[in-house]
Length: 136
Image 1 (cartoon, rainbow, N blue to C red):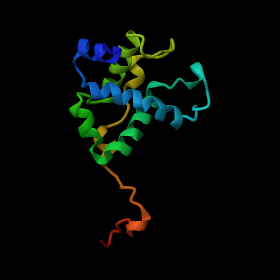
Image 2 (image 1 turned 90 degrees about the vertical axis):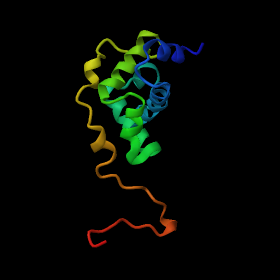
Image 3 (image 1 turned 135 degrees about the horizontal axis):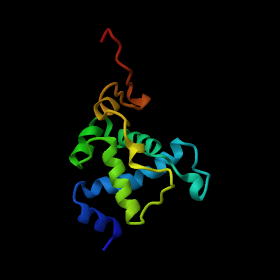
Image 4 (image 1 turned 45 degrees about the vertical axis):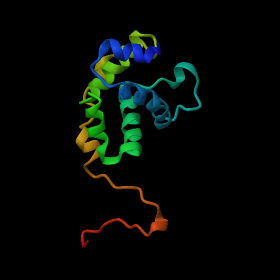
């Protein structure tokens, strides 16, 4: 059996899609921190850096529905992402540094504010889109 599926099956709190999304988002987090050219432990990101990369990746994929998608996976706050990370660390599917802890994922961000509040779609200029003004 796929090792990620095994972790997901044993724990059961979060949807399999959450685990898959976390792995997809790791590279985004490395890019956000400017460590994409590093190797080994030089690519390591903190809990806060990881959730910021995840937030950006979710905005690109889901736009203002990001919070709803995450909640449908059982992820209600950034600490839930930390729990998933440490499940994967315990299964030896992710590495950690001695200083990494679940507390690194506390006080991340409010999902509604991060995804819905202030969302502006990135529309291509060739369709004649323009930002709404206060007069619209």
